[in-house]
Image (cartoon, rainbow, N blue to C red; front, side):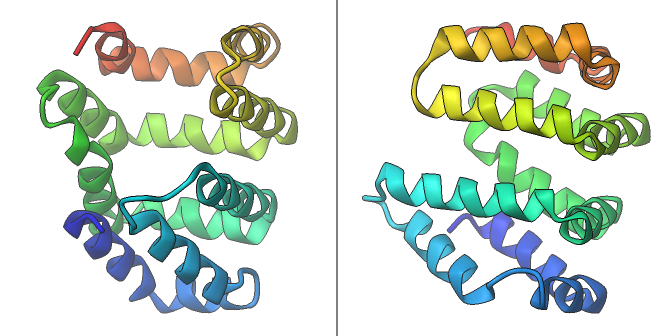
Length: 174
């Protein structure tokens, strides 16, 4: 497991309100098994689908979603998690800088909260993730278009990410 990710998870777990809030909402043994399977070099797609399913059910629970969003407001939790997320992008310093900058912006975090607060938007995001996992590019593009046309919160988040250069860096070739 990535060292920065492990530090971020330890910081999150060290917060009593997070640990206590999730204990009755999430099967911690299942999470432990999935994280161990994900850290194996020969993991299969089924493990990733199981983790996505667990993440999806967790984000549908208001208590879990609120606990995670509150945690991400804390610098001591957010920064190690962001460092772990961008570590594989070391060969793309512009993307690392853009993502890191966006996560430090309270306006971006407010837009993320607004997007995640909408059940319709969450459903479209999960459908897009499913399309990506199944390598259905047409479905992915269609879901993204629906998000931007029907949901102002998704447009506002895209503009907030654009201000930090995230969209520009995602388009740039490796």
